[in-house]
Image 1 (cartoon, one colour):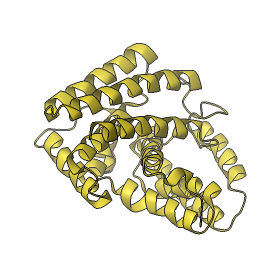
Image 2 (spheres, helix red, strand yellow; image 1 turned 30 degrees about the vertical axis):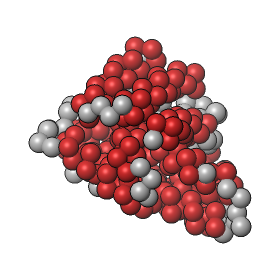
Image 3 (cartoon, one colour; image 1 turned 90 degrees about the vertical axis):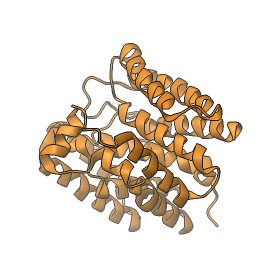
Length: 271
């Protein structure tokens, strides 16, 4: 169990780096530019992920020792503080929560499959949020203003964006023999389905509608084997002009990369 949790922790770190380096991504930091994040850079994101890496290693150790949930929560809070201190940003705050949640759920299920993992995620989230009001954050305010589920709802439902949307989209494209475009099919599905509270906070319901419409357009371009890379580059320029971004999509894309890396599907050769 210890070695399996350590391996998943490493893949969770790898997934976050793969998301960061995927280029182009509308409104997000990538190898080309910082998107709509004028306060961020590739270097700053990498510094932040170094903090995430240390956190996930410590979390895996805590879970291997059988420590209680309160100990794991403390590690997450410490990681958020360290990220702010060392990187001067909270850019991976959502990923600290999601990756920690998935790793904690994996410690409970011990290879029980994705359905069991999803159930464990929902159960842990239920314990974390039981009777506690949402804290004050841009995401929570967007949830209140627009009636969105946000990261809290996603967790309480067992990460449906990961297990019911992103992974099936990738697997369908891979089964069709198109590994190169499978990642973009996954990105399109997440853009089309996630209630991204970062987009809501920045640009309201119109911003979220833009992200979701672009997600559906990306899916169609991938399906038709059309030039989706040029489409994404053009949309990045548009997102920057609007100050629009999609942090929730980015976190869930990183989680998807991580799980596919962990299962070996990311390197799988289409049959």
